Image 1 (cartoon, rainbow, N blue to C red):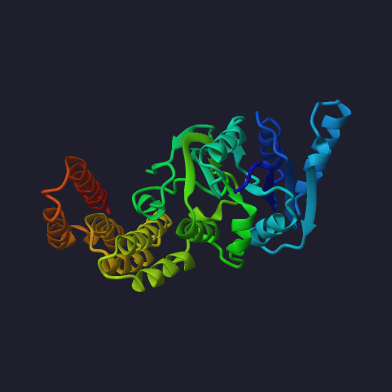
Image 2: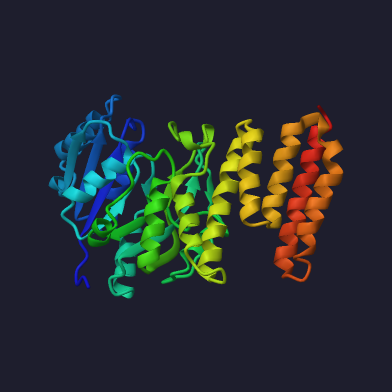
Length: 358
């Protein structure tokens, strides 16, 4: 048990000259000051570090009250975001590490809420808050997640919506990070989610529904949406491998499989939006073999309609049969679930109507 909370903020930095000062300012302006701020420059070539150093020098010259020696800048050759975060973990002096991406930001009460979670949970190793999306036009969008405070049921929540927290809204005990050997290096997507799921398997999570972190989803260099992965990510495959080792009637097994299916659907959606409908069909077929739920069926219909374009109407009988078979299984379910099914039916019909125009 930790009796005190010493927070090191780790900011991995790579070519974010246009956002890093705002990100740093969101840490400096916290109502509960960070004990240390470590910026790991991962071989930036756009003057990101110069922006940070110039900003600090200007603030010191203006005699702005802040303990500027709390900020450390460490340079390394470009190795990727996981290696940068792991470097920050290794050099951190605090017993908890709060991660913040160089193009995200915190609201002023974020660390104060983390400290409150630490106290109320009696030093839970994983402390996290909700977040919201900040769009390029400064509009905000709420993430769709469901989470219960102090819950081990992380996987059930992930399977039913967006991630309840992300790499800019979580603070983890350094000892746990060392035990888990940090972030996996070399993965283009999902390296943070792999760590969260390993943490969830061995630790409780103290969580606040307050949206105190801003995840900027339309900032330059967010490549995962514009150039989505076309294959299932490693962390999802690992979930399936773990599920296969569990008893067939295990609730955890069901939740792990549902998480992997959710991941495949998300990849499929991004590929459809990027014009890769055939890739999406392959991903969704894989998901449907794992769990033949109606939501995946509707995504299959969507991808098929986009891929076939003018032939979409010719698929109507097959689509109707597929949707009807999955929908009928849920007729006795809750009203909320039935409304969800009707919403996917409507989305499918709208897609078909659009395809009639080709």
